[in-house]
Image (tube, rainbow, N blue to C red; front, side):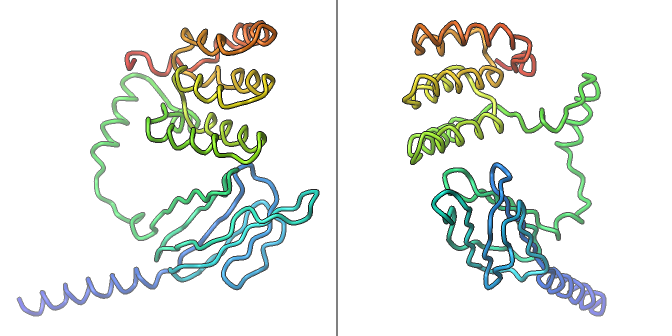
Length: 247
């Protein structure tokens, strides 16, 4: 009996040590997939590419600097420390406002064969409804209140109107919105043309298009007919059908 316990303990310790010794990896890209240079730790080999990859690295804290070329020369868009967990695959996306959005997949958890009851039930329910979600539909979720507050603050604090538009449009791609939220974001744009362009883009990302007259109301008399024409042309592209019975 003692021998069995000893062997079990030895196996657990060996597994833990093996997991800690597993290498990690890092992938870096820009939010818009544009070209950039990367300095990671002591490596300066990432020169003007769309994706920077560092493989077989140890867990720990590393220095990371991202630069891009513009009319003024090279501009640093991010510089700071990034923490790489043990035995993990880390994906880092440099956002338009210079922040770093990080997602981590732990390789040692990928081999866990435990039964996910919640996912199984969800899969069965979708099959019963005859619904097959595309990858785009799966990531298109109604934005939460705290997420919207963070997005609105980043748009408000953007250094230029171009960056402001980039942040707001990136938010549209990632989330769905209520008209009330779009009204708040549209008001943050100073130029009328920018307001109109954002209002048009946002129309197909709202869950309550019947309320979009509230966005129309904050535009001037020249912009309103243009928004009306866009809404009419894209009437069948709104997201309301994905949320029937939820609102």
